[in-house]
Length: 131
Length: 347
Image (cartoon, rainbow over all chains, first blue to last red; front, side, top):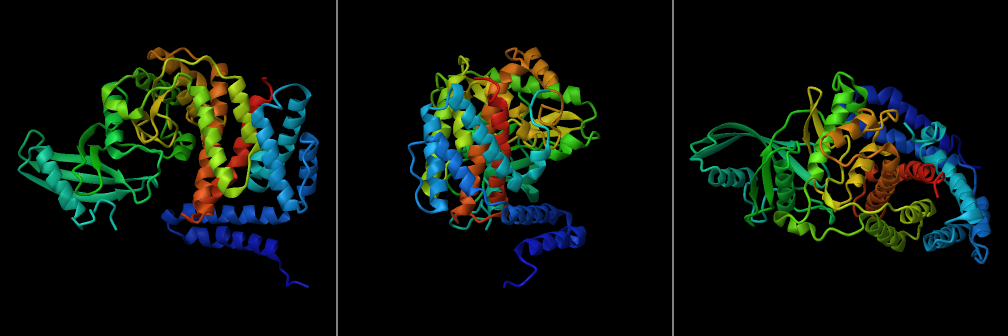
Protein backbone atom coordinates (compact mmCIF):
# COMPACT_ATOMS: atom_id res chain seq x y z
CA UNK A 1 0.00 0.00 0.00
CA UNK A 2 1.18 3.50 -0.84
CA UNK A 3 1.94 6.04 1.83
CA UNK A 4 -0.87 8.45 2.62
CA UNK A 5 -1.40 11.37 2.17
CA UNK A 6 -1.29 10.80 -1.54
CA UNK A 7 -0.43 13.05 -4.44
CA UNK A 8 -3.80 14.77 -4.58
CA UNK A 9 -3.83 15.69 -0.92
CA UNK A 10 -0.22 16.84 -1.00
CA UNK A 11 -0.91 19.15 -3.92
CA UNK A 12 -3.88 20.61 -2.12
CA UNK A 13 -2.06 21.25 1.13
CA UNK A 14 1.00 22.62 -0.69
CA UNK A 15 -1.21 25.08 -2.51
CA UNK A 16 -2.89 26.15 0.73
CA UNK A 17 0.51 26.68 2.38
CA UNK A 18 1.62 28.80 -0.56
CA UNK A 19 -1.49 30.98 -0.66
CA UNK A 20 -2.26 31.24 3.06
CA UNK A 21 1.23 31.49 4.53
CA UNK A 22 3.80 32.37 1.91
CA UNK A 23 2.25 34.80 -0.56
CA UNK A 24 1.69 37.55 2.00
CA UNK A 25 5.40 37.67 2.84
CA UNK A 26 6.56 37.75 -0.78
CA UNK A 27 7.60 40.98 -2.48
CA UNK A 28 5.09 42.36 -4.97
CA UNK A 29 7.37 41.40 -7.86
CA UNK A 30 7.12 37.68 -6.96
CA UNK A 31 3.37 37.65 -6.35
CA UNK A 32 2.44 36.84 -9.94
CA UNK A 33 4.85 33.92 -10.11
CA UNK A 34 3.47 32.56 -6.82
CA UNK A 35 -0.08 32.72 -8.14
CA UNK A 36 1.03 30.87 -11.25
CA UNK A 37 2.53 28.14 -9.06
CA UNK A 38 -0.75 27.92 -7.12
CA UNK A 39 -2.67 27.64 -10.37
CA UNK A 40 -0.36 24.90 -11.64
CA UNK A 41 -0.86 22.93 -8.40
CA UNK A 42 -4.65 23.25 -8.77
CA UNK A 43 -4.61 22.04 -12.34
CA UNK A 44 -2.37 19.11 -11.44
CA UNK A 45 -4.70 18.12 -8.56
CA UNK A 46 -7.79 18.25 -10.74
CA UNK A 47 -5.99 16.30 -13.44
CA UNK A 48 -5.25 13.50 -10.96
CA UNK A 49 -8.83 13.53 -9.70
CA UNK A 50 -10.51 13.61 -13.10
CA UNK A 51 -12.65 10.56 -13.79
CA UNK A 52 -11.22 8.16 -16.36
CA UNK A 53 -13.07 9.24 -19.48
CA UNK A 54 -10.83 7.96 -22.25
CA UNK A 55 -13.05 4.94 -23.04
CA UNK A 56 -16.13 7.17 -23.42
CA UNK A 57 -14.26 9.61 -25.62
CA UNK A 58 -12.91 6.80 -27.82
CA UNK A 59 -16.45 5.41 -28.19
CA UNK A 60 -17.80 8.83 -29.18
CA UNK A 61 -15.04 9.28 -31.76
CA UNK A 62 -15.70 5.78 -33.11
CA UNK A 63 -19.36 6.72 -33.58
CA UNK A 64 -18.33 9.81 -35.56
CA UNK A 65 -15.65 7.99 -37.59
CA UNK A 66 -17.26 4.55 -38.07
CA UNK A 67 -14.63 3.12 -40.45
CA UNK A 68 -11.85 3.73 -37.91
CA UNK A 69 -10.42 0.71 -36.05
CA UNK A 70 -8.99 1.87 -32.72
CA UNK A 71 -5.52 0.47 -31.92
CA UNK A 72 -4.94 -1.56 -28.78
CA UNK A 73 -3.87 0.80 -26.07
CA UNK A 74 -6.13 3.53 -24.76
CA UNK A 75 -3.55 6.27 -25.19
CA UNK A 76 -2.80 5.35 -28.80
CA UNK A 77 -6.50 5.10 -29.60
CA UNK A 78 -7.23 8.53 -28.18
CA UNK A 79 -4.39 10.17 -30.10
CA UNK A 80 -5.17 8.44 -33.38
CA UNK A 81 -8.93 8.89 -33.09
CA UNK A 82 -8.64 12.58 -32.30
CA UNK A 83 -6.32 13.08 -35.28
CA UNK A 84 -8.71 11.18 -37.61
CA UNK A 85 -11.65 13.23 -36.41
CA UNK A 86 -9.75 16.51 -36.82
CA UNK A 87 -8.83 15.55 -40.39
CA UNK A 88 -12.44 14.66 -41.28
CA UNK A 89 -13.67 17.97 -39.87
CA UNK A 90 -11.18 19.78 -42.08
CA UNK A 91 -12.40 17.81 -45.09
CA UNK A 92 -15.85 19.24 -44.45
CA UNK A 93 -17.57 15.97 -43.51
CA UNK A 94 -19.36 17.58 -40.55
CA UNK A 95 -20.42 20.80 -42.20
CA UNK A 96 -24.16 20.26 -42.10
CA UNK A 97 -27.17 18.29 -41.03
CA UNK A 98 -27.11 15.46 -38.53
CA UNK A 99 -23.32 14.98 -38.77
CA UNK A 100 -22.86 18.59 -37.73
CA UNK A 101 -25.19 18.22 -34.75
CA UNK A 102 -23.51 15.01 -33.57
CA UNK A 103 -20.06 16.54 -33.88
CA UNK A 104 -21.06 19.64 -31.92
CA UNK A 105 -22.46 17.47 -29.15
CA UNK A 106 -19.16 15.55 -28.99
CA UNK A 107 -17.16 18.80 -28.93
CA UNK A 108 -19.30 20.19 -26.12
CA UNK A 109 -18.82 17.09 -23.96
CA UNK A 110 -15.08 16.89 -24.68
CA UNK A 111 -14.50 20.57 -24.04
CA UNK A 112 -16.44 20.41 -20.77
CA UNK A 113 -14.14 17.63 -19.57
CA UNK A 114 -11.05 19.59 -20.62
CA UNK A 115 -12.38 22.73 -18.91
CA UNK A 116 -13.13 20.83 -15.71
CA UNK A 117 -9.37 20.28 -15.36
CA UNK A 118 -7.97 23.47 -16.89
CA UNK A 119 -10.43 26.11 -15.80
CA UNK A 120 -13.49 25.02 -13.81
CA UNK A 121 -14.41 28.64 -13.07
CA UNK A 122 -15.01 29.15 -16.78
CA UNK A 123 -17.17 26.04 -16.76
CA UNK A 124 -19.40 27.53 -14.09
CA UNK A 125 -19.72 30.83 -15.92
CA UNK A 126 -22.71 31.66 -18.00
CA UNK A 127 -21.95 30.92 -21.60
CA UNK A 128 -22.63 33.21 -24.47
CA UNK A 129 -21.17 36.34 -25.80
CA UNK A 130 -23.95 38.78 -26.62
CA UNK A 131 -23.80 42.22 -25.03
CA UNK B 1 24.48 39.55 -20.62
CA UNK B 2 22.88 42.68 -21.92
CA UNK B 3 21.22 42.07 -25.27
CA UNK B 4 22.59 45.35 -26.63
CA UNK B 5 26.23 44.46 -26.24
CA UNK B 6 27.90 43.43 -29.46
CA UNK B 7 29.91 40.27 -29.80
CA UNK B 8 33.03 42.42 -29.59
CA UNK B 9 31.88 43.47 -26.13
CA UNK B 10 31.12 47.14 -26.79
CA UNK B 11 29.48 48.79 -23.82
CA UNK B 12 25.84 49.25 -24.94
CA UNK B 13 25.48 52.53 -23.10
CA UNK B 14 28.57 53.99 -24.75
CA UNK B 15 27.42 52.72 -28.14
CA UNK B 16 24.04 54.40 -27.62
CA UNK B 17 25.63 57.69 -26.54
CA UNK B 18 27.87 57.75 -29.59
CA UNK B 19 24.95 56.93 -31.86
CA UNK B 20 22.74 59.64 -30.36
CA UNK B 21 25.51 62.23 -30.64
CA UNK B 22 25.60 61.69 -34.40
CA UNK B 23 21.83 61.33 -34.82
CA UNK B 24 21.13 64.53 -32.84
CA UNK B 25 24.15 66.56 -33.98
CA UNK B 26 25.00 66.98 -30.31
CA UNK B 27 28.43 67.90 -28.98
CA UNK B 28 27.90 65.78 -25.89
CA UNK B 29 25.41 63.10 -24.87
CA UNK B 30 24.92 61.91 -21.32
CA UNK B 31 22.61 59.01 -20.48
CA UNK B 32 21.66 59.63 -16.85
CA UNK B 33 19.23 56.79 -16.50
CA UNK B 34 19.47 53.39 -18.15
CA UNK B 35 16.80 51.13 -16.74
CA UNK B 36 15.43 47.98 -18.24
CA UNK B 37 11.62 48.07 -18.31
CA UNK B 38 9.55 44.97 -17.87
CA UNK B 39 8.78 44.00 -21.39
CA UNK B 40 7.87 41.12 -23.57
CA UNK B 41 9.84 37.95 -24.00
CA UNK B 42 10.56 39.07 -27.54
CA UNK B 43 11.70 42.66 -27.15
CA UNK B 44 13.63 44.52 -24.56
CA UNK B 45 12.79 48.09 -23.60
CA UNK B 46 15.16 50.42 -21.77
CA UNK B 47 14.08 53.72 -20.23
CA UNK B 48 16.57 56.47 -21.07
CA UNK B 49 16.94 59.88 -19.48
CA UNK B 50 19.26 61.74 -21.81
CA UNK B 51 20.86 65.16 -21.73
CA UNK B 52 22.09 66.59 -25.02
CA UNK B 53 24.50 69.48 -25.35
CA UNK B 54 24.46 71.33 -28.66
CA UNK B 55 22.43 70.58 -31.73
CA UNK B 56 18.75 71.17 -32.50
CA UNK B 57 17.56 68.84 -29.70
CA UNK B 58 19.71 70.17 -26.89
CA UNK B 59 18.21 69.67 -23.45
CA UNK B 60 16.84 66.80 -21.41
CA UNK B 61 14.76 63.99 -22.92
CA UNK B 62 12.80 60.99 -21.68
CA UNK B 63 13.06 58.25 -24.24
CA UNK B 64 12.74 54.48 -24.59
CA UNK B 65 15.25 52.32 -26.40
CA UNK B 66 13.82 49.18 -27.95
CA UNK B 67 15.89 46.22 -29.06
CA UNK B 68 15.68 42.46 -29.49
CA UNK B 69 15.71 40.28 -26.41
CA UNK B 70 17.77 37.13 -26.43
CA UNK B 71 14.96 34.95 -27.80
CA UNK B 72 13.40 36.21 -31.01
CA UNK B 73 10.19 34.86 -32.47
CA UNK B 74 10.41 34.25 -36.17
CA UNK B 75 7.02 35.77 -37.03
CA UNK B 76 7.68 39.13 -35.41
CA UNK B 77 9.18 42.09 -37.25
CA UNK B 78 12.77 43.24 -36.93
CA UNK B 79 13.48 46.52 -35.14
CA UNK B 80 14.05 48.48 -38.40
CA UNK B 81 10.71 47.16 -39.69
CA UNK B 82 8.91 48.03 -36.49
CA UNK B 83 10.43 51.52 -36.67
CA UNK B 84 8.93 52.01 -40.15
CA UNK B 85 5.53 50.76 -39.00
CA UNK B 86 5.60 53.17 -36.06
CA UNK B 87 6.47 56.00 -38.44
CA UNK B 88 3.57 55.12 -40.72
CA UNK B 89 1.16 54.92 -37.77
CA UNK B 90 2.46 58.15 -36.29
CA UNK B 91 2.13 59.85 -39.66
CA UNK B 92 -1.50 58.71 -39.85
CA UNK B 93 -2.27 60.36 -36.52
CA UNK B 94 -2.40 57.17 -34.45
CA UNK B 95 -1.36 57.68 -30.84
CA UNK B 96 2.00 55.94 -30.59
CA UNK B 97 5.33 56.73 -28.97
CA UNK B 98 6.89 58.98 -31.60
CA UNK B 99 9.72 57.03 -33.29
CA UNK B 100 12.89 59.13 -33.29
CA UNK B 101 16.09 57.35 -34.35
CA UNK B 102 16.93 53.97 -35.77
CA UNK B 103 20.36 52.41 -35.29
CA UNK B 104 21.21 49.57 -37.65
CA UNK B 105 24.97 50.09 -37.85
CA UNK B 106 25.92 46.43 -37.56
CA UNK B 107 28.10 47.12 -34.52
CA UNK B 108 25.59 45.34 -32.29
CA UNK B 109 21.91 44.45 -32.29
CA UNK B 110 19.62 46.91 -34.07
CA UNK B 111 17.68 49.27 -31.85
CA UNK B 112 15.54 52.35 -32.09
CA UNK B 113 14.72 55.21 -29.80
CA UNK B 114 11.21 56.54 -29.28
CA UNK B 115 9.57 59.08 -27.04
CA UNK B 116 8.63 57.76 -23.59
CA UNK B 117 4.89 58.00 -22.99
CA UNK B 118 3.18 58.02 -19.60
CA UNK B 119 0.45 55.65 -18.49
CA UNK B 120 -0.64 52.23 -17.30
CA UNK B 121 -0.81 49.26 -19.67
CA UNK B 122 -1.87 46.36 -17.39
CA UNK B 123 -5.18 45.09 -18.77
CA UNK B 124 -6.51 43.69 -15.49
CA UNK B 125 -5.90 47.03 -13.73
CA UNK B 126 -7.58 49.06 -16.46
CA UNK B 127 -10.54 46.67 -16.47
CA UNK B 128 -11.04 46.71 -12.71
CA UNK B 129 -9.91 50.10 -11.40
CA UNK B 130 -12.33 52.92 -12.19
CA UNK B 131 -9.86 55.48 -10.87
CA UNK B 132 -7.63 54.69 -13.83
CA UNK B 133 -10.56 54.94 -16.25
CA UNK B 134 -13.10 57.41 -14.80
CA UNK B 135 -14.93 57.83 -18.12
CA UNK B 136 -15.21 54.39 -19.73
CA UNK B 137 -17.40 55.41 -22.70
CA UNK B 138 -14.85 58.10 -23.59
CA UNK B 139 -11.88 55.72 -23.52
CA UNK B 140 -13.75 53.05 -25.51
CA UNK B 141 -14.57 55.69 -28.12
CA UNK B 142 -11.00 56.89 -28.25
CA UNK B 143 -9.77 53.35 -28.82
CA UNK B 144 -12.16 53.09 -31.76
CA UNK B 145 -11.20 56.47 -33.21
CA UNK B 146 -7.53 55.67 -32.94
CA UNK B 147 -7.95 52.35 -34.73
CA UNK B 148 -9.88 54.03 -37.54
CA UNK B 149 -6.91 56.36 -38.13
CA UNK B 150 -4.59 53.36 -38.42
CA UNK B 151 -6.91 51.64 -40.87
CA UNK B 152 -6.69 54.64 -43.19
CA UNK B 153 -3.17 53.48 -44.10
CA UNK B 154 -3.62 51.50 -47.33
CA UNK B 155 -1.17 49.56 -49.47
CA UNK B 156 1.05 50.14 -51.26
CA UNK B 157 3.31 52.16 -48.95
CA UNK B 158 6.93 52.25 -50.15
CA UNK B 159 8.46 52.27 -46.66
CA UNK B 160 6.38 49.22 -45.71
CA UNK B 161 7.35 47.09 -48.72
CA UNK B 162 8.71 44.43 -46.31
CA UNK B 163 5.11 43.62 -45.34
CA UNK B 164 4.70 41.99 -48.74
CA UNK B 165 1.64 41.99 -50.95
CA UNK B 166 -1.72 42.33 -49.27
CA UNK B 167 -3.73 39.13 -49.76
CA UNK B 168 -6.96 39.34 -51.73
CA UNK B 169 -8.93 37.34 -49.15
CA UNK B 170 -7.58 37.91 -45.66
CA UNK B 171 -10.06 35.63 -43.85
CA UNK B 172 -9.39 32.57 -45.99
CA UNK B 173 -5.64 33.04 -46.16
CA UNK B 174 -5.55 33.51 -42.38
CA UNK B 175 -7.42 30.23 -41.86
CA UNK B 176 -4.98 28.49 -44.21
CA UNK B 177 -2.13 29.86 -42.09
CA UNK B 178 -3.65 28.57 -38.84
CA UNK B 179 -4.15 25.14 -40.41
CA UNK B 180 -0.48 25.05 -41.36
CA UNK B 181 0.42 26.08 -37.80
CA UNK B 182 -1.71 23.27 -36.34
CA UNK B 183 -0.18 20.77 -38.77
CA UNK B 184 3.32 21.80 -37.63
CA UNK B 185 2.29 21.29 -34.00
CA UNK B 186 0.64 17.93 -34.74
CA UNK B 187 3.81 16.78 -36.49
CA UNK B 188 5.88 17.15 -33.33
CA UNK B 189 3.44 16.15 -30.61
CA UNK B 190 0.93 13.78 -32.22
CA UNK B 191 -1.97 15.81 -30.88
CA UNK B 192 -4.93 17.26 -32.78
CA UNK B 193 -7.61 19.79 -31.93
CA UNK B 194 -11.09 18.92 -33.28
CA UNK B 195 -12.78 21.97 -31.72
CA UNK B 196 -10.28 24.29 -33.40
CA UNK B 197 -10.67 22.43 -36.69
CA UNK B 198 -14.42 22.87 -36.40
CA UNK B 199 -13.95 26.60 -35.82
CA UNK B 200 -11.62 26.91 -38.81
CA UNK B 201 -13.98 24.98 -41.11
CA UNK B 202 -16.82 27.24 -39.94
CA UNK B 203 -14.69 30.31 -40.70
CA UNK B 204 -14.11 29.06 -44.24
CA UNK B 205 -17.83 28.42 -44.83
CA UNK B 206 -18.89 31.72 -43.35
CA UNK B 207 -16.11 33.95 -44.65
CA UNK B 208 -17.47 37.43 -45.43
CA UNK B 209 -16.73 39.25 -48.69
CA UNK B 210 -13.24 40.68 -48.27
CA UNK B 211 -12.70 44.38 -47.65
CA UNK B 212 -9.89 46.32 -49.34
CA UNK B 213 -6.76 45.69 -47.24
CA UNK B 214 -5.40 48.22 -44.77
CA UNK B 215 -2.71 48.36 -42.10
CA UNK B 216 -3.64 46.23 -39.06
CA UNK B 217 -2.04 46.29 -35.65
CA UNK B 218 -2.89 42.60 -35.08
CA UNK B 219 -2.56 42.81 -31.30
CA UNK B 220 -4.81 45.80 -30.56
CA UNK B 221 -6.13 44.90 -27.12
CA UNK B 222 -5.98 45.91 -23.47
CA UNK B 223 -2.46 45.34 -22.19
CA UNK B 224 -0.90 46.75 -25.34
CA UNK B 225 -1.70 50.44 -24.91
CA UNK B 226 -1.04 53.04 -22.25
CA UNK B 227 -3.78 54.95 -20.46
CA UNK B 228 -2.80 58.20 -18.76
CA UNK B 229 -5.30 60.25 -16.74
CA UNK B 230 -8.11 58.25 -18.24
CA UNK B 231 -7.08 58.96 -21.82
CA UNK B 232 -5.38 56.84 -24.44
CA UNK B 233 -1.72 57.80 -24.32
CA UNK B 234 -0.02 55.44 -26.80
CA UNK B 235 -0.46 52.13 -28.58
CA UNK B 236 2.48 49.75 -28.11
CA UNK B 237 3.71 46.40 -29.43
CA UNK B 238 3.60 46.72 -33.19
CA UNK B 239 5.63 43.62 -33.93
CA UNK B 240 2.78 41.64 -35.52
CA UNK B 241 1.21 44.33 -37.69
CA UNK B 242 0.55 43.77 -41.37
CA UNK B 243 -1.96 44.19 -44.21
CA UNK B 244 -5.39 42.69 -43.77
CA UNK B 245 -9.11 43.07 -43.22
CA UNK B 246 -9.88 45.90 -40.80
CA UNK B 247 -12.48 43.80 -39.03
CA UNK B 248 -9.79 41.48 -37.68
CA UNK B 249 -8.55 44.25 -35.37
CA UNK B 250 -12.14 45.01 -34.28
CA UNK B 251 -12.80 41.34 -33.44
CA UNK B 252 -9.53 41.05 -31.53
CA UNK B 253 -10.41 44.01 -29.30
CA UNK B 254 -13.96 42.76 -28.70
CA UNK B 255 -13.21 39.06 -28.16
CA UNK B 256 -14.15 37.67 -24.80
CA UNK B 257 -10.64 36.32 -24.21
CA UNK B 258 -9.29 39.88 -23.82
CA UNK B 259 -11.79 41.26 -21.32
CA UNK B 260 -9.63 40.74 -18.23
CA UNK B 261 -12.32 39.48 -15.89
CA UNK B 262 -14.98 41.96 -17.08
CA UNK B 263 -16.89 40.04 -19.76
CA UNK B 264 -19.71 42.59 -19.48
CA UNK B 265 -17.44 45.22 -21.05
CA UNK B 266 -16.98 43.85 -24.53
CA UNK B 267 -14.32 46.34 -25.61
CA UNK B 268 -11.24 44.95 -23.90
CA UNK B 269 -12.83 44.96 -20.43
CA UNK B 270 -12.72 48.76 -20.74
CA UNK B 271 -16.14 49.75 -22.02
CA UNK B 272 -19.08 48.91 -24.23
CA UNK B 273 -18.72 47.58 -27.76
CA UNK B 274 -21.24 50.22 -28.89
CA UNK B 275 -18.94 53.06 -27.77
CA UNK B 276 -15.88 51.48 -29.32
CA UNK B 277 -17.63 50.87 -32.65
CA UNK B 278 -19.22 54.35 -32.61
CA UNK B 279 -15.80 55.95 -32.14
CA UNK B 280 -14.44 53.82 -34.94
CA UNK B 281 -17.15 54.93 -37.37
CA UNK B 282 -17.02 58.57 -36.24
CA UNK B 283 -13.31 58.78 -37.14
CA UNK B 284 -13.88 57.44 -40.63
CA UNK B 285 -13.77 53.70 -39.98
CA UNK B 286 -16.28 51.55 -41.85
CA UNK B 287 -19.61 51.40 -39.97
CA UNK B 288 -19.57 47.95 -38.36
CA UNK B 289 -22.27 46.42 -36.20
CA UNK B 290 -21.79 43.99 -33.32
CA UNK B 291 -23.19 41.07 -35.36
CA UNK B 292 -20.59 41.58 -38.06
CA UNK B 293 -17.79 41.44 -35.50
CA UNK B 294 -18.88 38.00 -34.21
CA UNK B 295 -17.18 36.25 -37.12
CA UNK B 296 -13.93 38.06 -36.30
CA UNK B 297 -14.35 37.30 -32.60
CA UNK B 298 -14.40 33.62 -33.52
CA UNK B 299 -11.25 34.23 -35.58
CA UNK B 300 -9.68 36.01 -32.60
CA UNK B 301 -10.22 33.01 -30.32
CA UNK B 302 -8.81 30.69 -32.99
CA UNK B 303 -5.75 32.88 -33.39
CA UNK B 304 -5.12 33.07 -29.65
CA UNK B 305 -5.58 29.29 -29.36
CA UNK B 306 -2.97 28.65 -32.06
CA UNK B 307 -0.53 31.08 -30.42
CA UNK B 308 -1.17 29.54 -26.98
CA UNK B 309 -0.41 26.07 -28.35
CA UNK B 310 2.80 27.36 -29.94
CA UNK B 311 3.86 28.95 -26.66
CA UNK B 312 3.09 25.77 -24.72
CA UNK B 313 5.10 23.80 -27.26
CA UNK B 314 8.15 25.96 -26.55
CA UNK B 315 7.91 24.68 -22.99
CA UNK B 316 6.99 21.10 -23.81
CA UNK B 317 9.77 20.65 -26.36
CA UNK B 318 12.30 21.73 -23.76
CA UNK B 319 13.52 24.68 -25.82
CA UNK B 320 12.29 27.13 -23.19
CA UNK B 321 11.09 25.54 -19.94
CA UNK B 322 8.71 27.99 -18.28
CA UNK B 323 5.75 27.81 -15.92
CA UNK B 324 4.02 30.67 -17.71
CA UNK B 325 4.33 28.99 -21.11
CA UNK B 326 3.18 25.67 -19.65
CA UNK B 327 0.05 27.25 -18.15
CA UNK B 328 -0.79 28.88 -21.47
CA UNK B 329 -1.85 25.47 -22.77
CA UNK B 330 -4.60 25.42 -20.16
CA UNK B 331 -6.21 28.55 -21.63
CA UNK B 332 -7.03 26.59 -24.79
CA UNK B 333 -10.17 24.77 -23.50
CA UNK B 334 -11.73 28.15 -22.59
CA UNK B 335 -11.03 29.37 -26.10
CA UNK B 336 -12.50 26.19 -27.55
CA UNK B 337 -15.65 26.70 -25.54
CA UNK B 338 -15.98 30.26 -26.80
CA UNK B 339 -15.42 29.11 -30.38
CA UNK B 340 -18.20 26.53 -30.04
CA UNK B 341 -20.53 29.14 -28.52
CA UNK B 342 -19.86 31.58 -31.34
CA UNK B 343 -20.36 29.04 -34.13
CA UNK B 344 -22.98 26.53 -33.00
CA UNK B 345 -25.97 28.76 -33.72
CA UNK B 346 -25.03 29.90 -37.21
CA UNK B 347 -24.40 27.55 -40.14
